[in-house]
View 1 (cartoon, one colour):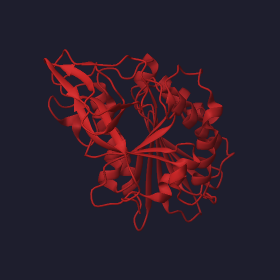
View 2 (cartoon, one colour; view 1 turned 120 degrees about the horizontal axis):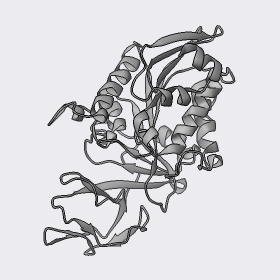
View 3 (cartoon, helix red, strand yellow; view 1 turned 90 degrees about the vertical axis):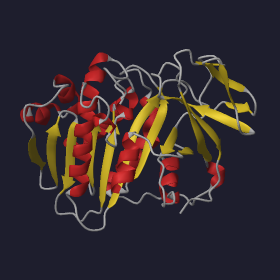
View 4 (cartoon, helix red, strand yellow; view 1 turned 90 degrees about the horizontal axis):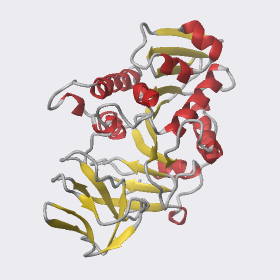
Length: 345
């Protein structure tokens, strides 16, 4: 496997050739400047040598196997590093979350992986399917990566996705709930420079991958949506040039040249509630082609279930991630209202 990767420099190909696990981990050096460790299928760590570094960066993709643009973006960066076109100044771990689902061309195999972090993988029936086992392992890899460095460190985790439906804001990010901690203006402007100018502030703990890193390691973590789902090879990768350039600057320790914080360049939303499914007959009162961030007025019947109406409670509420087909008990949609900058640092 070492020789296979060394020759092809295609980590995605190696991962998809071994979607369940690697028979052994391995490591090697790129010249005198970077140490490479492959811990498992879809898990690769780059550590600069002879360079003082202060950041531990996790870039994850394919937590949903059919969200392919982030997979191609991450693999392109990995290939550039393995080809020694990029020389890193910070530690970076790339995670390809669900290789089996990529193989299958589906969002997941048995269960939504991004609902299984922060210990959710071991609740109820426990580690009973591939996604639950993988979530448990991914948590362990993040812990190993962050815990291996002592002292004052800046921990970052960008979990890259694409959305099922179209959106009035093509690219947006969810900033996990941070009780007792303000949100970072610098991080928000970094994302704006990546082409992600819409931020959703979450209102409660969740079981997503980004919340896991934020809550347990105080990482600057985000779930980042980079547009709409397309099959692998059919993404317009020119739409992600800004993201790739900013990630490259971050990893190589170059000056990010971030602009001053400016509300006029941003769309800020506060999650005001989650609407969960309680009955099998749950259905939305809008068509399937309604875009994310569509707003509805107070009193509008958003959905119906169990003979009752779910109505808009605030003057206006916008929707994101509507999905009526989730199992009973899970979230069907996040509801948003406009936010300000009062909780930013």
